[in-house]
Image (tube, rainbow, N blue to C red):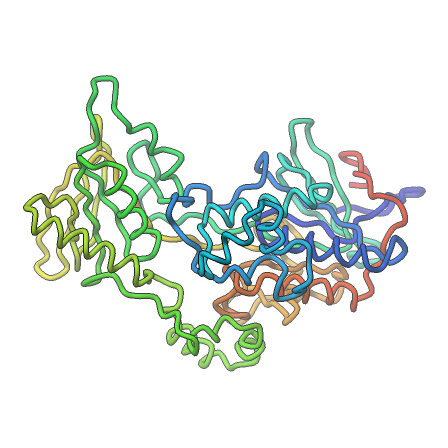
Amino acid sequence: MSQVLPGDAPQVHDLIGIGFGPSNVAMAIALSEHNAHVGRQGSVTARFFEQQPSFGWHRGMLIDDATMQVSFLKDLVTLRNPASEFSFLCYLQSKNRLIDFINHKSLFPLRVEFHDYFEWAAAKVDDMVSYGHEVVSVTPFVHDGAVEYLDVTVRSGEGLETHRARNLVIGTGLRPLMPEGVERRDRIWHNSDLLRKVDGLDGGPDGTHPSRFIVVGAGQSAAENVAYLHRRFPRAEICAVFSRYGYSPADDSGFANRIFDPGAVDDFFAAPESVKSRLMAYHGNTNYSVVDIDLIDDLYRRTYQEKVLGAERLRFLNVSRVTDVEETPGGVRATVKSLVTGEETPLDADVVVFATGYGPADPLGLLGEVADRCLRDDEGRVRVERDYRIATEPGLRCGIYLQGGTEHTHGITTSLLSNTAIRVGEILDSLLDRGVKSTSDEARPVADGAAR
């Protein structure tokens, strides 16, 4: 725990951001636009730390023909500021593709194109981020018995340094989930590994090619992986394993999509716990374990065509699950169990891909003893206010904001892009309403160990 020492008066960031994915890029943009509007005197000083060497967002999922499942208008800024120079439309204009995109008549860009937009936007605010910097700890700085600041220690190639902040915004993203007892290995992948590893399978030293892939999962990523591997390896058999009878289509109808509206966050936050649970159950089919109907139809056409031609490479092992998987010399063996008969069948493959989703990182994982001052609900979940600020003991005067990990309080949009632009605007408003104060000079790091 840091203590005030005589003459120790380091300059302080108004806000430190942990992570620099799309949510915190949007936060940086909101700050940049605010500062440009109010001038130096009323500006909010901020620094973001990202452990990756450069911006990257689910790079393993950037399959060449995969499209976004959210409208381009739900970019990093438009719902908050339609006139922003950071919008997807401004990005298109800068790339000389605006007219081409309009003629394309689609609300849903290629995922690789939207990633390029994110990179473009991140580059416009790169003066606010330090890449290759991993946050390793957060400690309280106590003055007169209250936590006035938070000291954030980061590791980079130059060692450790500590930065001080009045507020934190945590946007550390999602973590790949694997089934219990299954670890990622050379031939056992999470779908986030796909594009990073798949090139290594093209024609081994003996000229061999993959003969079989197993893809586990029933959601959008699983279906995209099946389609991609089927196209990429025309000699290989692709086995899709899932416990359902078939892929379920995503409900993207107009009324159902209202669950993603900014106003729906207010409704969800105010609702009793029983209503929250029902809303998640009612509308889970807008996002979880569902597939775009066009992709479902495409896969069905492929498998029917193969049956007609008598050359079936696309197999669907439905109402089944993988009960065991182990690497073998040159491959992997999975045990597939029928949920109807209980029969278990060994299946040898070159690779098993688990498209088993993502989960939020523990929002309090980096906070150390600061986490003990954060309040929890009756189920042990972190309590979060409507402005995305963690509820804390009165003695903690700093704001700790979450961009993710608030599904239990704010609903289904927590981990999605749909409400990002609105959310960062609400966090900025909260900072300003709480009277965040700016320093006149650029904040500097505290020497490691100072006032510790």
